[in-house]
Length: 262
Image 1 (spheres, helix red, strand yellow):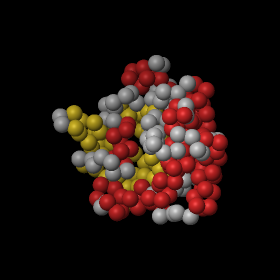
Image 2: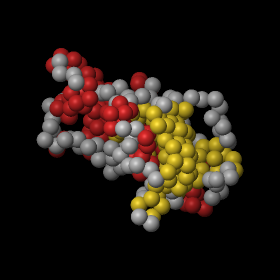
Image 3: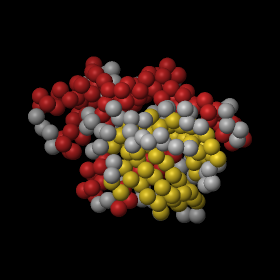
Image 4: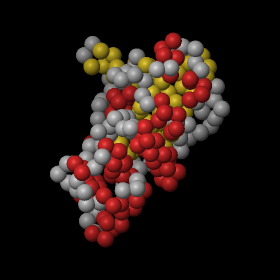
């Protein structure tokens, strides 16, 4: 088990990576909007095969961080290396190449309301993979839907689905491209406890089947506990604490303690 130790820049930080391969390396990342500093010299690693949870209060920069990672937001300073790609300096073609390897599950699922579930899943295959063979498309779609337990919903529209089903379809649409890294933005937001648990189990099963490395952004402590191998607390634009769920829940820091005791 990694121990939480003092760190010169952040308040507390895990000591070492135990020689694991890093698939995401972020160093001294900064981002501001106007005079508001959102990210302040953030340092972060995601290791191969790991589920890393980033927790923190709303508005603390969690979503901004992962949007910087996939090039949706350009940072003001710092370095982001993902799978060997130096993200802030990629051109559009290189960004698209990287994004094929990084699945982004949006908080709102981002499904096209005018398309059926089948058509939503076909879209990235046709656009990104230039795949138009009907039999191959159908095989990949059914496989992805079976992975999330929703093969029966293939011809339904998003308006006919529950919130939890939409989350699952959004994950299926991401998985269909077989990414190496998964980014989940508030995967259990707005869901009841039973559906949330099902989504947490799905996140773990995705890692097991697809051997993904994942970053899970959440302020849901149950999600953090059930999915996270390692947790990072992002408060006031900085990494304040990282470690296992048990270690972090025992940290004697008023702000972190208040979050865990909420």
